[in-house]
Length: 337
Image 1 (tube, rainbow, N blue to C red):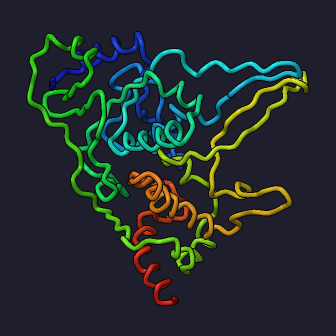
Image 2 (cartoon, rainbow, N blue to C red):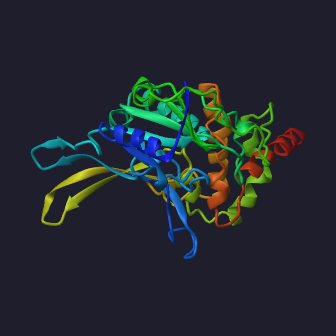
């Protein structure tokens, strides 16, 4: 069902949802960008429709709503362990773009369908509704069309601020009852059909690619800051931290904290060993995880082509360009036998 709502009607929808849900959406943070005179767009709780950034790509994904940067799992003393309360006790409505909605599918695969169910992810994932924001144009560094994530699969609402107001497609009965007095319209939520950036993953990509010299370039170019991981909607590495309280050193809490496979120390193991010491080795692991081994296991690529890793890299390393080097790299390793 489709409707066209003015801002007042759209706000009424939001106000009705706020009774049972917390609303998360991309929000502009003025002066909080990479440089002092730039803005940052990231996910926060919103109260007003006017707060939602519809026309630019967010610098960070929705990921932090389902996977908090730092999440207390339980509290402990010498004698007992107490489970931490969930970060929210209401459902959540998340406004996001098609690529990010495909990212949710990948998180669900890893946390709910990977041979076990992650309890802490599951309790935040439940009672979540998704509002997909239409894309009237392709943004810098996006390559969602190449990755097949430019059109959403499952959503509750689709929304786009178009001619005459907010164009709304509803698959959610609760919303239909709120806007049911409005006249139904034929609407079309736009999604991009072509990006300036295109990637091609070679059909003959194999594990032999690890022998290529292409990875050596990143030993010097990458500074292992890990920004690419933190903005990625599908990177899920984390570490565990036990925090002991200063007023009682025998009590504390265990936290799950976002981590990065690109930073020093992540692959260190007992005895002083490390699986990936060089930055090129870490880049190789990340690239192949995104476009090779995840697909072998699940049938589709992990990367959704949002391009945020390219946007944020201070060394201008392009992940899409790296993917496009794989074909020549396969020729190199084939020629070398």
